[in-house]
Length: 183
Ligand SMILES: Cc1cc2nc3c(=O)[nH]c(=O)nc-3n(C[C@H](O)[C@H](O)[C@H](O)COP(=O)(O)O)c2cc1C
Image (cartoon, rainbow, N blue to C red):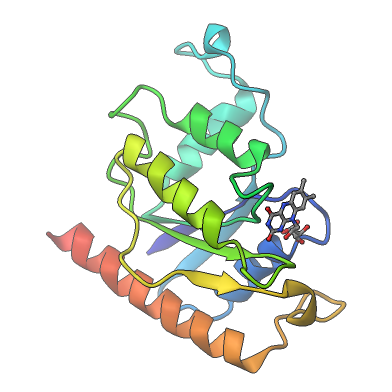
C-alpha cells in the first residue's frame, strides 16, 4: 500500500511535516508513505487549469492518483486551513466530482502550538473533503497539542504517548483503507 502524506505547512521546521515523517516510521509492514507539501504550486487560476497543467500541478495530481490513501498533516491558521494547502486541494479538486480526490481515502492529523491542537482545521478540512467526495477515516481526531514539546531538535517525535497513539491511528487507517479498497 502506498500512502501520500501532504503537509499543510511549508515551514522548514514544521511540526506537521515532522509528524508525517514520524508516521512513516510507524507503519505496518508493506505500507510506505511519501511526504510532500504544496509549496511549489502556482496559485489556482482556472485560466491555467487546462488539459496540460502547470508541471508542479501535474506532479501533484499524479502522486494523488497513484496513492492508495492520503494522510494530511496540517496546522490551523486562524482557526482554518492554511492557504497553501487549500490551494493544493483546489488544484486537485478538478474536474468536480471526478477528480483524483474523489473516492480517495484520507486521514487528517494536526499539530499546533496551542492546547487545542488544530481541532478546528480538521473540521473545516472534513467539510472541504465532502465537496471533493473524499472519504475521511471515521476515527476520533488525531491532534498534537503543544507540538513544541513533542519533537526534539533533530525533528524526532520524542513524546511516547503521542508515538503510541500515532501507531494505533496509522494501523486503524491502513485497515480502513484496505477494507474500502476490497469493497
Ligand atoms: C498565520 C498563523 C495563524 C495561526 N493560527 C493558529 C490557530 O488558529 N490555531 C492554532 O492552534 N495555532 C495557530 N497558529 C500557530 C501554529 O499552531 C504554529 O505556528 C504551528 O507550529 C504551525 O505548524 P507548523 O509547525 O507545521 O508550521 C498560527 C500560526 C500562524 C503563523
